Length: 138
Image 1 (cartoon, one colour):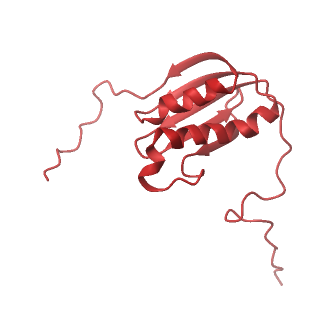
Image 2 (cartoon, one colour):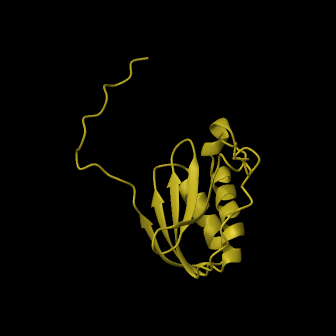
């Protein structure tokens, strides 16, 4: 006699109501991952636990518009709307990837008035690692 468990919210209609209370984080790390197709902005505390995140896709951009600088700026703004309320004052920035959203996201962060302790480029660079795939012939 298994009783069905009622669902409390789903991904489709937004966040579930049983969310952990917002932690106060005075210091954090902002991770910007800028690929050619999308830009993801994640804010973590100093231990690396995710506090808030947004991407150009979650901000409503679809298709090639996700890779634009404006979409990256909007994603950064969306993240900071939630994080500034949690008391973020100082942060370090880690930028990864070759996308055009790198500078736009960083500019949006600077405009928010958060003190940046460092801005670091952590794009992975191979020291001649894997053999690349064969060249495309069109």
